[in-house]
Amino acid sequence: MPGSKDYKNLKKYIFCLIFVASLALSVFYGFQKQGFHEDEYYTYFSSNRSLGLYQPDRQWQDRQTILDEFAVKKGDGFNYGLVKLVQSWDVHPPFYYFIFHTLCSFVPGVFTKWTGIATNLLAFAISFVFLCLIMDRLKVSPFVETLVLLFYGLNPQTVSANIFVRMYAWLGALILVCAYLHIRLIQEYDQNASDLKKYCIRLLLPIMVASYIGFLIQYFYIFFFVFIGIATAWIIAFVKRDIKNAAIYVAGCAVSLMLSVVTYPACLSHLFGGYRGSGASGSFFDIQNTGMRFAFFTGLLNTFVFAGGLVIILLVIFIGTMLKMAAKKKNPFVEIPLKKDRKGSSGNALEIIALAVATLGYFFMASKTALLVGSASNRYEMPVYSLLILLIFMDAFYVLDNFGNRALIYVFAAILMALLLKGHLSDKNVLFLYPEDAGKIEYARENSKEAAVVMFNPVTAHNVWRLTDEILEYDKVYYMDESNLQRVTDPEIVNADKVILYVADEDHQQEAIEEFVNSCKNLSDITWISSEDMWTTFEIN
Image (cartoon, rainbow, N blue to C red):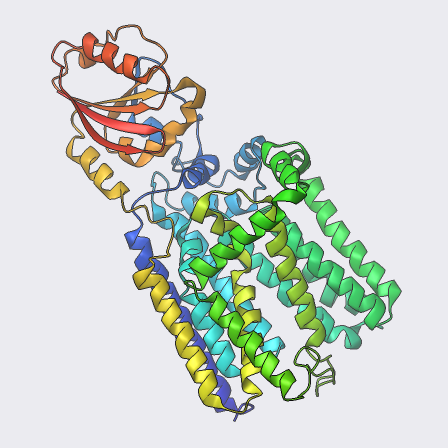
């Protein structure tokens, strides 16, 4: 029975099995990951840089010099001051980069996808544990708990978050920690409210610590924190009728954010003056784009999380609700019990309301302010996909369970598992794998002894790092400013019998290539090899 020790042990074993299967699936896709998104390169560079990535004109640069900008140099590990400084120059808070830099510091001189994936899998473990704790607090049905963990842990977008070497897996972890701590505060409020010390230390301080870290992981954390904070303050002030403790709660939350600003003052310029802050605020205040943006991110949720089946799930909830109402049963939206359980905590209606407000609030705010970059925009909503899955499944189960026919629930679960398989096998919804990069890297490896030339656009010279996987296959590469049309004089290039040429998109591209070929004694035939964003590779013989 649900309260027995054997039952609890069985549930732990099942949850552990799901967790191991989820880790194994992410590791499996980790092996399939062949390349990096440009922002992933930035993660390595901004966490581990040495002198700073630069491109000299008409000069060679050896492999070690390039590698030192993406991997921790021996003896330079655990340099958190530099990590913080580099982030202050850009638009990001530093805490995720501290974590990532720490793992990279244990393997100096190594540039590998696995340091990034391992960093994210730590975050996934935290997310999984706190999702279990949240469902336990909400007294979710064991069947729904299992279904949520399966669908979340094995979901293509969870896998995508785990293998995308950015901060979004950690943002998701801190959001779940924040959600759990607020649910605990609401449930245990009555036992601790009269003792100010217990209220502050046991309930409020953990929220402050989590929010301090969460804000310094990624600024989007503030969306979830503000919405769940508003809901919690409202519950304390107007449901619990305790204005004093509501004010203390609000003050504690404000202090946690103030401490973030004090320890990382660059966040103010990032939020209110940086290019991302300015762009986000401009998008947020543009009322006309609201419908388009919300539809775009809802479409991503439908396509990449539910494999196109979200409408089926919502129809199940809607039709079930209508049938219940037509049968003159109680309204399912107010039927959630408000009685106190044997531990004296409030029933779960208030917690679910706070959780729903925060989750939907975050989803809306992210949809208004995030970058629109196609399927990659999923990363901005990934942090709340776990909670959206939980809320949708709880609602669907609640509606179906009231019909008293367990077969309906099993059919619904089968549909969900079919959608999960469809997302992996048919739709191939796991992102950030870049299988097309495998051939490019192999080509560079096969030609690693030839002369490699990188002809860069001086306006966007930093985009050379998009080629990092390829140019690290060569012992050295020769850099050229594409706008400089002077003849090449370097003997090693001029006398080469074969050159692998990487050319950036630029107005003088064709003219630059012609001048380069004319500068070389033994070169005349140009063969296109491959193209990618901003770059084209040619073989010249």
